[in-house]
Length: 348
Ligand code: NAP
Ligand code: ZN
Ligand code: ZN
Image 1 (cartoon, rainbow, N blue to C red):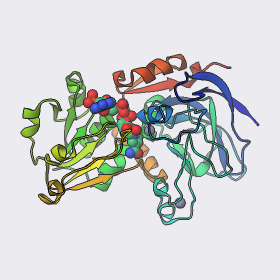
Image 2 (image 1 turned 135 degrees about the horizontal axis):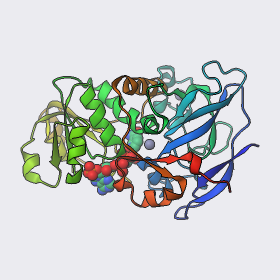
Image 3 (image 1 turned 45 degrees about the vertical axis):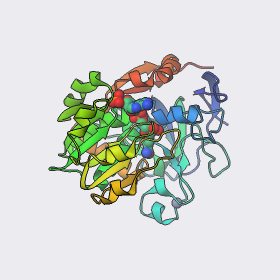
């Protein structure tokens, strides 16, 4: 079995180790990718800390992967060696159920195969992009448009599509008032994408030092979420609230900021997912609460193409592999996404 260097967490709470992991020999439909960059998503930390239970250790995280095709299987038609490509959160799905047929593999009734910490169809456990190379079936490989740099494009594969999908679905456009809660990896792309779609965007966060950046990314205003007076002034104001915060929210308070028919979209995924709300917070103004999980393969390509057309990439801090443990310790210091330069990954 071919092997590749990777940063692995041997067990919950254990430090990262540089190790060699196996990547399967190419099947007919497989693409082998030399990884150039991998973003650090907050979800990587949720898995590393086993916040949601069920993490497979040893764990190689990473699902914001960009690189260059090294080799393709004999039946691959869409990619050739040298192509600039990406891999996001999914590397497989059943391919037969209604969501899969509709191109929404993220809602596969059997559960999609996650890029890491998942049991693949052949029984192996998937390992992610904090590694030198990866083998993925061509259906789950994305094309990186020429206009996008491979480093700044990496976070579009998860963070980007995760905010693009609900913004599109809820018809974000001119005349809409969108509030983005939290400005980290997802939130800053939410601000950029919603603004380019034509919405009036408000960044609602707990970090006033991010105000100028929020405005530069296209927000019309910044609101400090610890300032109850400012929040009260926004009662009934928003059409859409995009919640990217990885911690529980006071749902009734936030629902109160939505106007008639407004929607609170949860993409943030707290360790404790149980939340409650007062039904009257919904029916008083026909409000809705929805959740949204990443995006399908077609929509991920659409996100990349949309961002290329509008000149959007993530704001990133490129870090060497040796800095990954420190980045995990201080993820909220990122402005606004740490991206690992995989060329700096040593050999075990
Ligand atoms: P991130 O880069 O760490 O950003 C989270 C932001 O939330 C922070 O920058 C901060 O912004 C705000 N925040 C408020 N309270 C916080 C708290 N108690 N702890 C940490 N941050 C807090 O995270 P991310 O990568 O954007 O991911 C955000 C969440 O989305 C995570 O739970 C992740 O697992 C989830 N996620 C979901 C999907 C999906 O498919 N639904 C996909 C990817 C990620 P301010 O300083 O502006 O307040
Ligand atoms: Zn992610
Ligand atoms: Zn399916």
